[in-house]
Image (cartoon, rainbow, N blue to C red; front, side):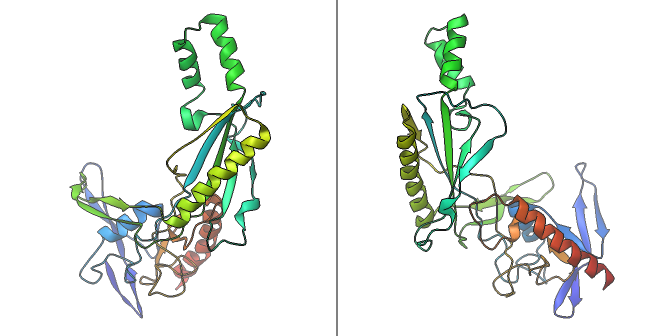
Amino acid sequence: MTRPFTSRARVEAVRFIRSDGATGRVFARAVCVAGNGVETPRLLLTSASESFPGGVANRSDQLGRNLMDHPIQLSWALARQPVWPYRGPGATSGIENYRDLKDRGANSALRFEFGNEGWNWPTGAPESTARELALSGLRGKALDTALKEQTSRHIRVAALTEQLPLASNRVTLDRAQIEKTGLPRPAIYFQLDRYTERALGNAKHLHEDMFAKIGVEAFWHKDDAQGAGHIMGTARMGADPGTSVVDKNLRAHAHRNLFLIGAAVFPTGGTANPTLTIAALALRAADAVLSSLKE
């Protein structure tokens, strides 16, 4: 529920539904929503009212739009000599030189990551390798020796691309699918544009150059872009209330005591993981939340 507050409305309470169907309201001087790129717009779009028919914080019609990820070109190879994967953290090295290209207007930035998990991502190895070797007839010590020899030579490389924010890539409500809470499920519309598809093609060629220099025995590419799971956008930050959802302090333009925390506020993405930026923005928002409690 909201009430006018100078040029902005003010969120007075949050209604909730428990798993047993019980309902209630929590009143607060400041409200923070941290549902990231899908659940944040879903909650606010579901909270439409007579005063806000397009949903809470959605006077700009930007809420739910500009959904982004890091579409990935995944490739893997079999080295001629052991490189000993399947140890240590998921990744310890990468190539960052392609993140600031002169022709960024035509070609996306790329960030290359070398994985320590061998072929686990593309093929499910080492389990899949053990299964294939066993199906070939190997058993006992012969199977153990062959498994160690092959998995020691697994190489995996991923190229993270930079996806542009598109208004058509968005989160809306699927009113044909209603949950037990009575709330509609989110509907997601998402496609890759030519900018990203061109980057994926560039990454394939660069992966092949890397493999050629290493001198691998064989290599493979995933035909389809892989998702990084780094969901960004849908409640973009900006100075203009007509084209964005929150201001630089993550405060909703339309509701002075509502703050949206997380990668949903990213106006653009990039090739790097968003975690540190999310943390930095959360710290910035914390100061604004504390200030709002004194108003």
